[in-house]
Image (cartoon, rainbow, N blue to C red; front, side, top):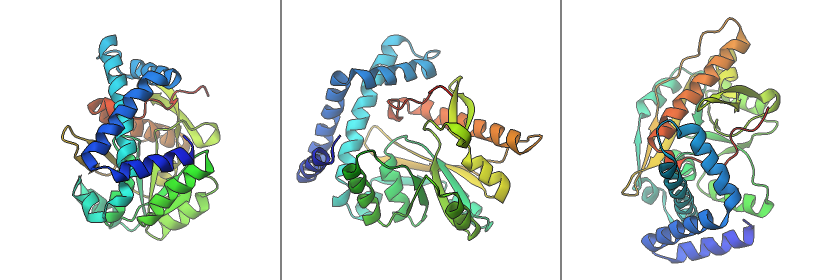
Length: 287
């Protein structure tokens, strides 16, 4: 999607009442499901990989359609974010598990938040700042520079602090050592030396190993932070209890087993809300 089209859609969504904007977003998602067969095929293949033991093919195809409807809803919600005050955003969201966040922060070792593209992840990024969690987000950048400026500008306008995921390890370590909090997504393909090959829904997937590696080396606690949308359109965000490091004979084994545990926890959350995860991403790329 080009930046010109995205800005035009933003103007349109912001000009509409919220209910009408969400209807339009859902319809755009359904249109994309019909008109973008390559991404539809990737999503359906992922759903089959993950849920074939619990859903027949008709149910998986229905989930695929619902998944694209979800993307359209997310698009409408995100492009309308500049119209919302922090309080209006929080009126649409519920937070649970804050006591786990505070307990982990109180240790003074820094805190690593792991998250994923479940529910409306941009609402989660914006809401965490409004809740005063002050999570510095490790982010990738959009391939289109205009889209990236719009996207990152929306985050900056809400006071969200971001670090580029490339060449940031020293900055991340420095931030953690001063008691800061960093947020990292763990659900996108990660190859090379920065990834660990661990199971995800029964098939090996390159998974970022930085959270487990930093936790093992620095003693930082790690907690999972995810969100989802309910049938009434309300967003729910949940902070987990601290996820302990797995036992390993050495650092490499500890990181491998801990990263696998992160994937297991994410799998469980996706199974609860299968239409709201990013199935269009090629999660199971070859090593």
